[in-house]
Image 1 (tube, helix red, strand yellow):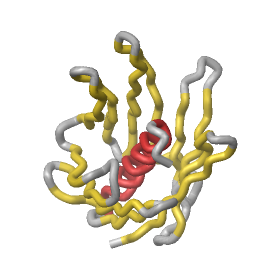
Image 2 (tube, rainbow, N blue to C red; image 1 turned 45 degrees about the vertical axis):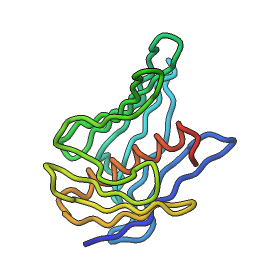
Image 3 (tube, helix red, strand yellow; image 1 turned 30 degrees about the vertical axis):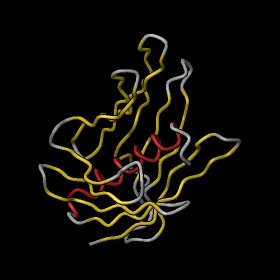
Length: 159
């Protein structure tokens, strides 16, 4: 099992970068870029600077409310963290059903599961996250999902 410390960089109140420290190998990172039409993208690279995943932000309107989707592509999977509204309350859903977050993922500790099997455990500390990779063949997927969750935290102003 590998453990990574995941940190983020905010400059001028804008999320700039998410990166790992520790673990073996060190070197997963994602830098937030904004395209000419305002579309935001986080390209995830490994220690050899190879692109291993990406997260894109898609915004849409629901009446008077702005909602968002974070589409995570990594490890041959496409996962969506989408903010939805019901009875004037917002909440997030994760798709597909084969991926789930067990525990309080907007709080402190949770597990990332694939097909109801834990592939990683995450602990949220004050200014960083710790992720323990349980299933090494899902390392890139687990880190990419955590990078997406950190982006959700930033979007919801929890960082």
